[in-house]
Length: 427
Image (cartoon, rainbow, N blue to C red; front, side):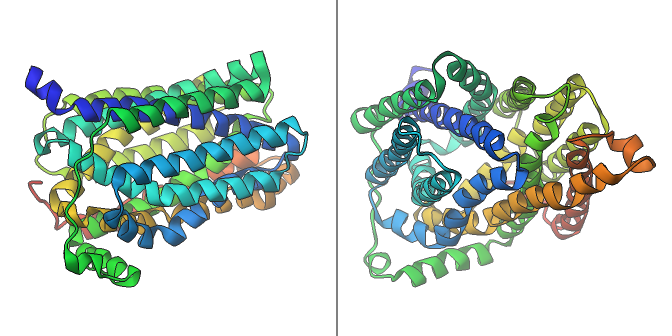
């Protein structure tokens, strides 16, 4: 038992402190999302925060893995974390000077997205280097667990800190968590060095990116799973863009209710993460990935859009988010066992480009559908099926969009079911 704990010591330190830093960053993002929606009243302008984060992330990801495979993983993570903290400090300065505008947030989010492009593959490879292979499922479940705790805690903590000390206090806590994570990584986490082969060191960025794509092409199962998840991300990111417009303007909604609904998604992910960490390894991980996403995309969207009380919204979030960590854990194990470690930085970056390019599209689609199509349509509707299904007033159009996203998610799952049916590996 002691040997197992010792073998995961570096992982436990990195996991705990990076999760704490993620909590601080997510609290700031949540508070700024509320600030921007209150300033503009626009779902699309609020969704552009996430669009600006993901566009540079997607556009440069395919090359970032080549750099990540060459650079020292620890130094890369330290530099990227420092620049991300600088973005939070810039928001603090602009707020204190009463100068903060939406375009400032868009620009800073774009810079954050660029940093994440390099940091993400570096941290993924670092995890592979410090985790024994037999512990992949357990540690993946623990990583999902920390993500779930962040989802549970950040809306409640952000709202409480904002009410007590304003945005100044939220950002101060964010910077404090960054400092703790930075020092832990710098002083106590040992990440083994990777040997860089001479031929890899001489590769150009285009050649390295091509090597990552070629590796994916040779591993069709991983490629098809990534493309499936890109479709899932399209529907899920559109849902995330619509949710504030669904909850905030309603008479029985508002900021606190949005925080509670978001926290229930986190509670569901927490439960799912615990399940993922203790469940025996399945015989067919591909089937688990497909079925969990089919259940998630349909139950959450249909139940949420057709219900009119916060209690049912919370139930919908629980049903929708409970399977997500189980899916994530099985996908993570497939990738880590299939792709050689010396290729993982490049492959993870190609994965990021292919799997996440739909996220900014989804945020833009969700915000535009609310502002330009469904809210105006529901405002003009005087009766009929649409009103009986989605209600009246602000938020009804957002409910309609969420319902359509449930149909989209169902179709995506059925299309890829045929593609993935022949893959029944014992991963």
